Length: 269
Image (cartoon, rainbow, N blue to C red; front, side, top):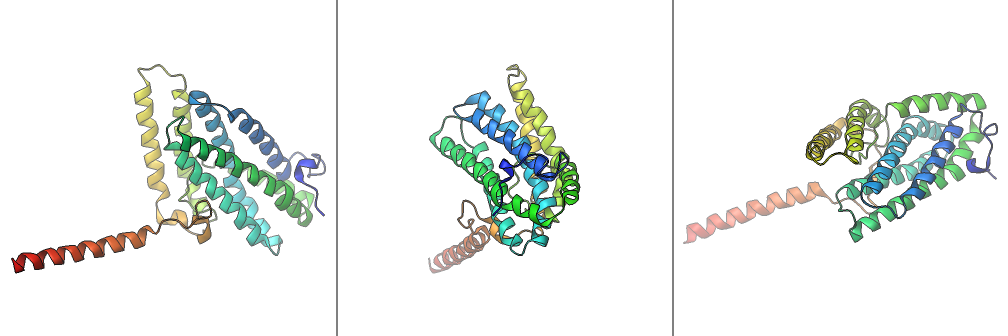
C-alpha cells in the first residue's frame, strides 16, 4: 500500500531538493490557479490561463524528459503507467490548442475549458497517488534529489505553450526544447503586455504574437520533432485522429477520376 505524495511531509518525500517535493509544490500552485479560473472571463480568464500554461507545460515537459524514462527503467509496468500520463498530457495540449481558437463566452469554449480542468486534475491525482509513490519505493533519497535538480534545470528551459505535434518522448521532445522555448517565452511576454495594453498598440502586439505562434508551429512540424513518440499519444480525447494522409490520397484519386471522366465526355461531345 502506497501513501499519496499529497499526504507526505517534505522530509518523507526526500527533502527540499527532491523531485517529489518540487512536483507537489507545483501541484498546489496548479490547484490554486484552477480555483481562480472558475467563473472568469475576458482578460481575467486570459491572464489566469497564461499563468497555468507557464506552469503546466514546462512541468510536463520536464516529467517526460527526466522522470518517465526512469519510471520505465525501474518499474516492470512503467511503460504502461507513463503512457497513460503521456496521453493525458497530449489531451491537455489538444484542448489548449482548441481553446485558443474559440471565442470568449461561446458554449463550446465553456465545455472545452471544463474538460481541460478535469484532465489537469486527473493528471495530478494519477501522479501523486500512483506514479510517484511507486517511484519513491524504487529509488533512493539521493536519487530523488538528483532527479529534482535535473527536473528543475529542464523545466527552466522548457516550452511554455501547447505543442500537440511534438513527441511526448525523447529524442523528439528534447530536440524541440530550445527553439520552442525561445519562441514560447517571447510570446508569453507579448501576451502579458496585451493584457490592459492601450488600444493603439493592441493590433501591433497581436501581430507579433501571431507571428511567434506561426513560427513555433513551423518548428514543431519538422519530422524530427515527432521521433520517439508512442503512436497512441496521437489520439485526441481517446478518439483516433483524422486520417489526413488517407484523405489526401483519396481526394487526389477522386480528382484524377473526375478529370478523366471530363476528358471522356469532351471527346464524346
